[in-house]
Length: 123
Image (cartoon, rainbow, N blue to C red; front, side, top):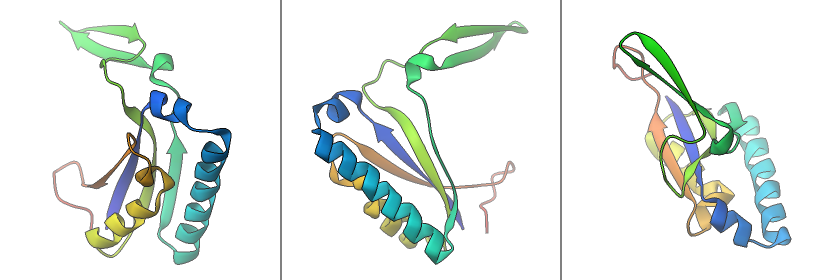
């Protein structure tokens, strides 16, 4: 079963952390990735740029329109994700709890199973 574990970032929360706390988060992600690779559950991880560098594309009356910057006014945004292949949803939740961000109030971790375009779940 494949799951996306998304990390929701709140810049104000991250800015309030000390340099040591930010370093501990980075080191914790390194250990987490190493353990995922060792267990064979790791597929992919990516970080995303700040939403201020994003563009939103919409099509109205057949014409594309591009707007720079974040689309939603929100404190949190997706900062990155892990794609894992695990035996059960419970294992995906267990892994999500190991991500350093999960222990920081104001940051969030979301676990969602991957599905095919027709709506059926990945085996």
